[in-house]
Amino acid sequence: DTMQSTRSSRGGLARLAGPANASSSGAAASQVQHGFKDVLIEGFVPDEDCAGPLFPFSVPVVERDEYGEVIDEKHFQISLDEEEMRDAAVGGHNSSKGQGDAEMADMLEELEVDDRPTKVVSLSMSLQVRAAVMFLDFEGKSDGYSMKMIIGNVGPRELAVVSGSSEAVVAFTRGVRSDGSQKVYTPGNLEYVSISSAAVSSLSMKMSDDLLSVIQLQKIGNYSVAWVQGKMERREAESGGEELILAPVEKKMRTQGTGAAFVGDFRLGDLRRKLVSKGIKTELVQGVLICDDLISIQRVGAENEIAIQGPLSPKYYQVRSILNSQFQICN
Image (cartoon, rainbow, N blue to C red; front, side, top):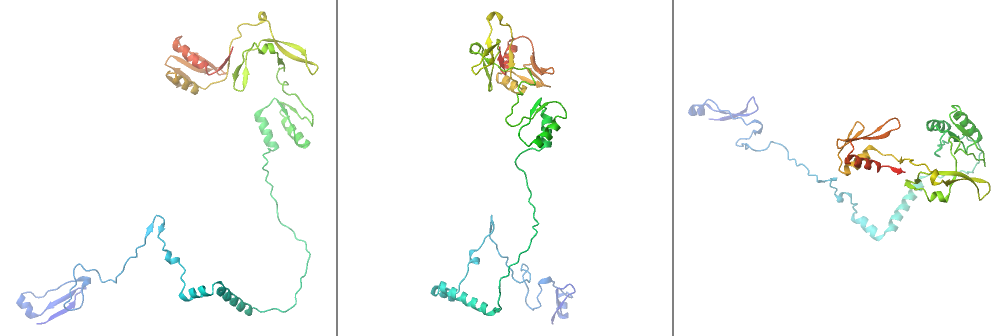
């Protein structure tokens, strides 16, 4: 009885039993499949959980931190063998210097020396410089066209042009005078013009000390304003000539009931915050400020006059008082 081994069509190892064994066991043939783990050696059967027939391979582990791969300082160290270290300890700087001199001597030997005589020759020639200079004006001055546009947008009644060359002044004033909407003055050096009272009816005068002691000045910003009733008088000036003085009038000539002048302006948003701070409920509807569903404040007319409407009540007088506090009142 013999046991024969042969490879099956599927690549496995087939073991065929002889006829004697087949009759005794009652089986015609038996076939064992091992797949890719089969080994053509009698008596060797690999384990089921063994790894595949590969060469050993290990994955290198690279350490990394938040900045990337960790650098090993040993890779960047300069290694000196024992002979170089010994030469450096004995010879020091002289040994390296001697080695450098020897290398330089070898290089000079390789160079061919030219023994032909030489001399310096001077030549004079004309060169055309092809260069350009670009000028950028950063002085902040406006050109004539821009100035004409600015003057047209401002629309002054009178205009005085100073400084600049005569040609620039003539060209500028010619363009400004074309519309004829303002007067243009071009004073020369040491010349002066008075344009303070040319467009409106106004006079310059001084107030007497008696009048200043009577009026009640109220501070509004950088100015002081007040109602003034006086009469104009001509008096001799200290420097010679006459000057206009505004003196107080007698009581019987004073006008009664001049009224009050409200100086300043306000915004509905600021007034609304002021009313809310005083405990008054407000609501802004289409440009009308409603206070406690009773009183309304709005601007009316072409001159944006302020109108306050509502029933006469303590709430009405409270709102009106808060509104008046937004202005400076001159009585």
